[in-house]
Length: 583
Ligand SMILES: *[C@@H]1O[C@H](CO)[C@@H](O)[C@H](O)[C@H]1NC(C)=O
Ligand SMILES: *[C@@H]1O[C@H](CO)[C@@H](O)[C@H](O)[C@H]1NC(C)=O
Ligand SMILES: *[C@@H]1O[C@H](CO)[C@@H](O)[C@H](O)[C@H]1NC(C)=O
Ligand SMILES: *[C@@H]1O[C@H](CO)[C@@H](O)[C@H](O)[C@H]1NC(C)=O
Ligand SMILES: *[C@@H]1O[C@H](CO)[C@@H](O)[C@H](O)[C@H]1NC(C)=O
Ligand SMILES: *[C@@H]1O[C@H](CO)[C@@H](O)[C@H](O)[C@H]1NC(C)=O
Image 1 (cartoon, rainbow, N blue to C red):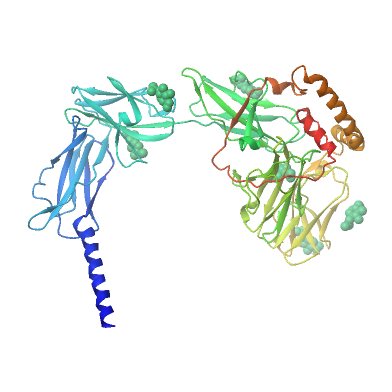
Image 2 (tube, rainbow, N blue to C red):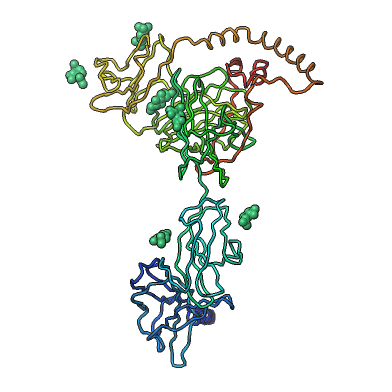
């Protein structure tokens, strides 16, 4: 017993010895210089911190003098610093130029001296005759492909160019990041960053310091309107920093493509040579589409990255790709689960969400990017920020219709259809209270106007017309539901009657079509290209790009439902439609 106690004490002693050697004998010095950018003539405060903190130190203050031949610095004691100062700070008055500093500390009779602290620099844009930095072209912001030349000028024959970037703690030489020539240093950077640059001369001087921002511009695309209305045109506007007449604009359709992880970009008609106008108008869009733009500058030639894709959403469902939501309602309470289905035969699917905050987000509780399993995905709405616009994208390049889904932690919710209702049909809007089945005495509003106030709990619109489109909400015993948009679509469109004909002749026609195509292929095989009905596709260049930023994990759905709905009006996807009819 006593023995073991001794042993424990012994261990404690040992560990404290080891510990003390580390902390007491090797304190570190941290120098803080403020401000970091000087207004010429102001004071500079140096503060030296001993880490870990301990008492009884004398502090020594140094000025750093560039030593070009040694690729280093010499340290010269500052005035009144020979015997060290008791204070752990030192003030320099009336400083005008860029300067470097360091500190050191000592204590005890046979004075123990620490190492020098790391050197810190205070930057000034005041140039001086001894040495100055000139930047060409003379501006603060540059593109990654620009040649930015740094010239050190002054009486000294030798010099070096230094830079400090926030992401590195040390300043580095031109040879680390640029191309050195006899008279200048050229910045050559393919990444965006902000740095401070200055020169150091052979005669030991610092030059003026200059901020330089290097960046890769990314255009910003806006698409309006966001929701398609029949017959309306879609306007794309591509914005780029530093607008000038030299930019040319390239316009793309974003085509979902699992092999490129996200999209490949197909040039839109008339944009092969780029357009001078930053606006592009598209007519006759009927389906959900993603767009992107890119800009290029001539002289010096400079291409930008693709913009993030932006969408125009179509609410109407179309035969090949139809997105369904179950339960079929726009407003959901946080306690329920919602099942999303992409009605398609394409092997790969994913569900996309454009969140209320305006970015593309992932969907919690659903599988990751581009899956091939499962024709639907169920997600729980427990998180309020599930609200947004949802749609499907297929691996064969199509978009589905889009829906609004909102999640509200409210007592009263309106049950309204998630898809547009067809003119002439009837629709019933219901008001639901948490924990209750049916309500009576409900007031309904359309675009803030009272439309029904009686004992009923639902609003029955027996034959919907275009004028019924708009926002609806309900009110019950003083509580009001959130409002939701009810979209109305025209009764019969030419393409849907065509679709019905095709549906009726579906299986028979499909088989005949396949035989016909097989024969056609057989005949053409020896000649050249397979049949392509898309005139644009051949002449359009296909670009691809990986998207980054907020685009990350999406859950993915492969639809297997609605396999009979095999035809749509987009000839581009003709071969797919045939495949579907046969299954
Ligand atoms: C800049 O770097 C790129 C590759 O990183 C290289 O191709 C190019 O020649 C360099 N330019 C100069 C002026 O050194
Ligand atoms: C350089 O940039 C810093 C901020 O990053 C700023 O505080 C400073 O004033 C700038 N200096 C000049 C000369 O523009
Ligand atoms: C650019 O295109 C838009 C839309 O077509 C048009 O209104 C505008 O006048 C055009 N601007 C120029 C400078 O051509
Ligand atoms: C979604 O909501 C917006 C307004 O918030 C509306 O313009 C759009 O038509 C709605 N889409 C559908 C499918 O209801
Ligand atoms: C709805 O009707 C009730 C009974 O007629 C009436 O008391 C109430 O004021 C009405 N509410 C509104 C908002 O008009
Ligand atoms: C709604 O109105 C239609 C047409 O008048 C009628 O057939 C239907 O029964 C009504 N539904 C309800 C729940 O009242």
